Length: 127
Image 1: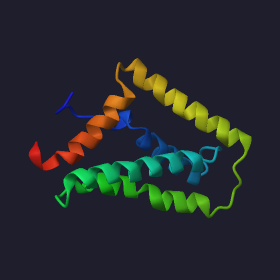
Image 2: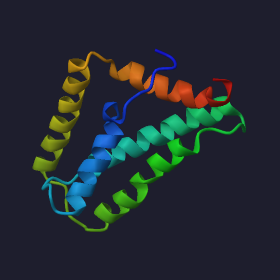
Image 3: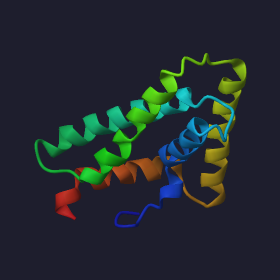
């Protein structure tokens, strides 16, 4: 799958950002703070792997910028001081399950998508 373009709709983070913006604009009712936390933890994990293998080489700036967008969104939602309730937790589970079903319906594999993302960023200058 190397060299294939991975569309944005295949990334859970993209869905989370869109939903979070809708939540801030009061379009959606359920607090996405848990989803944003998961996305930020994955970003940190991916950055550690990428920086370890890059060893000071340049990596695609867009990867950092796209993921950095999550931080101000997280801060805006966090400082609204709305407590997480059981509906938010149930929504988080449904959101992730829906994403996994979507990925399976389009005949892709969640592990391959994220492996290819990290692999591309590690080998950015070698492509």
